[in-house]
Image (tube, rainbow, N blue to C red; front, side):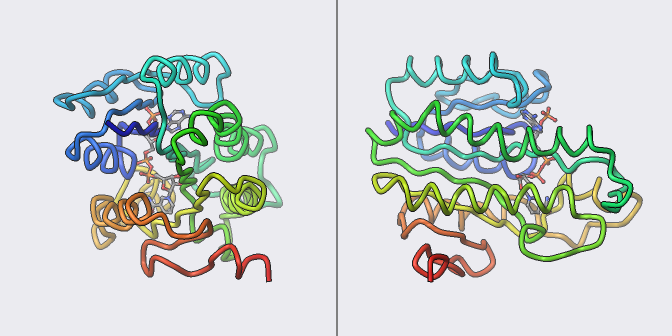
Length: 233
Ligand SMILES: NC(=O)c1ccc[n+]([C@@H]2O[C@H](COP(=O)([O-])OP(=O)(O)OC[C@H]3O[C@@H](n4cnc5c(N)ncnc54)[C@H](OP(=O)(O)O)[C@@H]3O)[C@@H](O)[C@H]2O)c1
């Protein structure tokens, strides 16, 4: 049975993706910081190891790796857990640097740390890395400088990894706007009920897993915007 590790699986896109893979019979390792939410999210999954913890913690990451070792393989790593930073979103001029450091720890360093720890089993399975990105990585929206620059860094890590790791598929996946807690925090007090549910994005993510197109940056909206060849040209 294929195995996926999905970070941030208790809510939003991570939960929707975890449910879809569990429905297909995949074995899962899933995390989130709040244990009760995580337990609720994965209840009823046939084969899941749910480990509460913070992806920025080396000790927690070691527990995730130990769970993968126990299962004996890893086909897909979905680096989905992410920090928006302060809400309301502050302009860069006044962005508190400790807050920015935490955003980068969560959105850039933790995904790379997991990739470093799990590249071996991923390679052995001919596996794929899916780093969940954002349009804020490529668009300059006021207030989005902290989060957006972290996702831009994640995109570039993904592109360079793709160039370095020929045996792996490395994807930056931009899901587009979704009606989630993170999105609500980005737009405090606003009605976001017109945004699509995260479940609507899952088919595009599953297509990446099923079809394994060339490594690159993919938007859920149109599935294939920049292949690695285009990034490198
Ligand atoms: N929503 C959008 O409109 C949108 C648009 C573009 C891109 N994205 C990206 O899509 C992905 C999913 O976002 P979402 O909107 O679904 O977010 P969400 O609803 O806020 O869910 C985030 C998930 O990650 C977990 N998490 C957060 N920080 C964590 C940490 N340090 N360690 C472990 N788990 C952590 C959360 O649980 P705990 O809080 O309990 O840890 C939760 O399970 C993110 O990468 C986000 O940047 C979202």
